Image 1 (cartoon, rainbow, N blue to C red):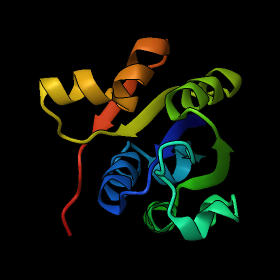
Image 2: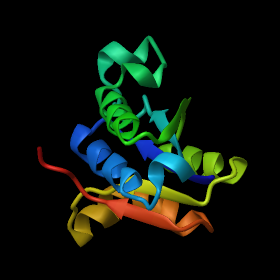
Image 3: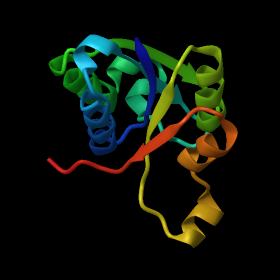
Length: 140
């Protein structure tokens, strides 16, 4: 079984692109297992107010969208949630699990934007030894 870690943020378009990538892997229904990870980062306000009381990833729309897409493709799914610094928690989950790759959703930013605000995807790429695929957004 090819195991993929799919860290999802709150953006449904990026989550859909990530799920599409995993669903399009060869023999996905028979040979791919995806772990969807949502990291609650309350310090940055990246979690909608209605989700702060209930730390369960299934309440986040982006997680539901990715789950629906992967279920349609017949991919085996596990959903996990965590809290803390997203890039650190993603790398930690990747190290603790038995994953072959990570599929992150990237957003377009200028070089200055990346320098000022940082990038979870970039941090994950720098900190893990696993292959990392960065998808963009998927317009409906």
